[in-house]
Length: 192
Image 1 (tube, rainbow, N blue to C red):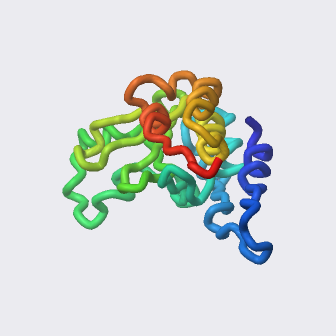
Image 2 (image 1 turned 45 degrees about the vertical axis):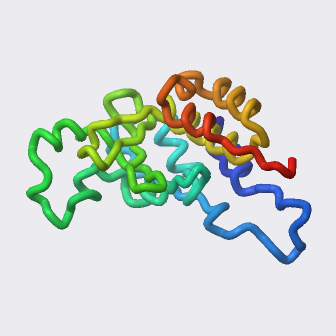
C-alpha cells in the first residue's frame, strides 16, 4: 500500500448513516502523525518504511487501543522514553539488547510498539512489565501495519477480518501474534 493511499483512506472515514449531519468524527480519530525525514534517514530501516512514515504517517490513535504519537517524537530508543527518571535503571546489557528497537507507538496498557532495525523493520510490541523481554510480532512492516489498521477499523465481522488480515500479512495471523489475538477477540457490531 502506498502512503498517500493509506492517508486518503484513513482520513475519509464514512460517517455512520444514523448520525446527525452536524456531528463529525473527532480530529484525533482521523489525524495522522508523520516522522521527520532527517530522523528517519538516520535509522536502519527499509526504504519503504522510511517513505511511508514521512509521506503518509500513521494514525494518532486507532483501534484496538493503539497510539502512534511517538512517530513524531523521533523514533526514540526504549531507554529514551521509559525509566528516564532513574537512568541507573538501564544497564549496558539492556541497552545492547534493545538497541535495534525504535518506538513508533504504544498499546492501551503502555507497551511500546517498535520497528526492529535488526529484522528488516518488522513491527513488534514489547512488554514493559518484564523489562521488554517479551516480544510479540505485529506486522512484517509499516505498509502491512497500515493495512491491518484499516482492516480492523473497516471490516464488519470476524470471519472477514480474519480473511483480510491473512491476505495482508499471513505471518501476523500466526498463533500468539498481535493481530491473531485481536481478531480472535473481535466483537461484531450487532446492528450490522
